[in-house]
Length: 155
Image (cartoon, rainbow, N blue to C red; front, side, top):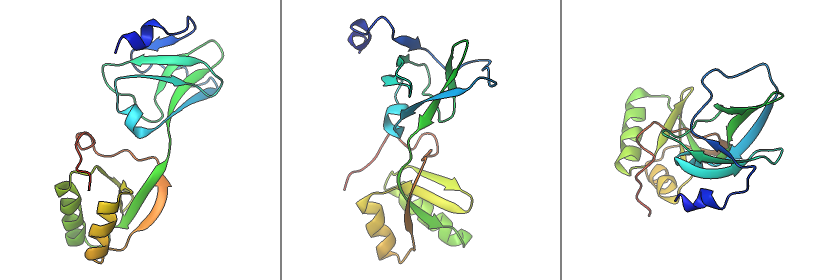
């Protein structure tokens, strides 16, 4: 994996973690990244204005975290929205049952303002349809509970 960084251009900035004391008064430049890449500890990315970064992290960065600063700008992680299924959680008994079923399939999930969000997957769509569970499709920055994103069954 370290070979990835050996051939990197001289202008590549190596990032080891988020900024401890970010200069939040500076204008932001975003580095857009998908959720699966963001979950990794070692990866490369290019910010909106073209600056390249190599990431060699102890812990994965999160959406909105600031990771680099110059005299004129701060750089922030911008997790890309992705297709998700949105289930309204109106009844607590139903919510617990749905969450259990999703967890039983080892899919990551996120609670957000009375809604349960899961990745848009055919197995989940079929489960919801069989159970007569109403869902909508939308796009969102998906940040599932920690510890659930590393294992999944593909159907």
